[in-house]
Amino acid sequence: MRKNSEYTADWSWHDANGYDRIVNVSGTMTALGGSITTERVATATAAAMPRFARIHEMQARASEVIARLTGSEAGFLTASASAGITLAVAGAITGMDPARAEALPAHSGPRNAVAVQMGHLCEYGASISQAIALAGAETRIVGQATLVKDYQLEAALDDSCAAALYVVSHHVVDYGMLPFDTFVRIAHAKGVPVIVDAASEYDLKGFLAKGADIVIYSGHKFLGGPTSGIVAGRKDLVRATYLQNIGIGRGMKIGKESIAGTIAAMEQWMERDHDAIRAAETHALEMWQAALTDLPGITPIRVPDPTDNPLERLQIWIDPAKAGASAAQFAEILGRSDPPLIVRGHKIEKDYFQLDPCNLMEGQAELVRDILVQVLSDASAAAEVDIRSALAAARNGGTQAYLNWLA
Image (cartoon, rainbow, N blue to C red; front, top):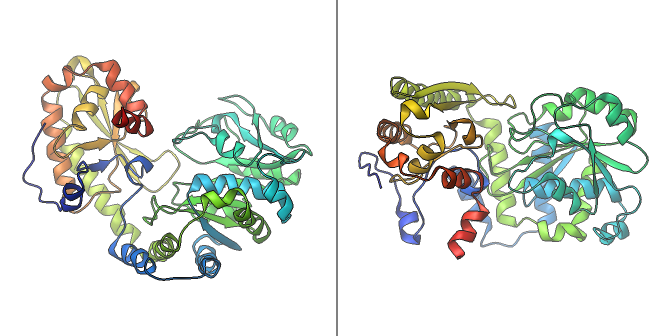
């Protein structure tokens, strides 16, 4: 266990509750709590808790804010972006028929297919296909994992197809899929609505402006709100999606405190100084890159976000022969530091991990630099880590870690 006493953070909440201290350079990850809120958002969330309120009235207020935020006709909040996908699919199936909404998921009717490009069938902690199935829908796979053709989507959008789902994520294949404008054009020519999963995207207006009918965002990732999902789009489809709260949406409901906090987070997003925040993140990346550049076997490179979010990450390439250990082994030791440094290891088997500065707290950029230099300069501890276990830990975290704690 490595100690670092120069950074004086407030760990009182972690220590009082017996939770691990964490420095998050992985990004807006659900398994780490999504993101951290500002005092403004935290205050708005807490203020609603000791009071009664009409949930539908709060949702109507949320709809007004969502419309300003996204350019949509209407919107509402639900438990998560994943819930938003399921509810949007359900709304496309049932329309405004409450009897059909109550019949889901067991009896979805003959028009229950959802077309998805094969390269978009990602796993984000759960699978896209399961989010679709929870609505009683059938996933209709379009094309192959590395190539989808126009006529393949056209053929999939027959009379049994209720919706077409387009996924925007670092998890999906980034080549060979139909571009968004082509996807929308083909779907609309067939009279099929387009649902966009844009959970972790900065672009809150572009997809609707380019023809999406429903777009789903996370309220607790880049927006920095409490756990929530934002559903935005055409008023008729938003209403049909909201109708699902009398059925499968009951288990996906959101409380008054999360509605209040997410409204505050959305308003804050529209007011914040995005350029200043980007500059602070860039400063951290430059500091880390400079500190690691001369270490043997370590190559730090700044890379843009794969989905065109206006941010960069530092990609740390590891040459095991020169550095003395693999990327997975170093990531494991970084996660055992004091405090633990949680890196972004989605592709750790390719000999690199990434550092994301979007969730840094005051003073943590320097702390991250110091821990990185300490760990990556001395491979002795990392070399002792079983590489197969390190790879498995990087790829099977989250729920598996909880199951391990219960064992």
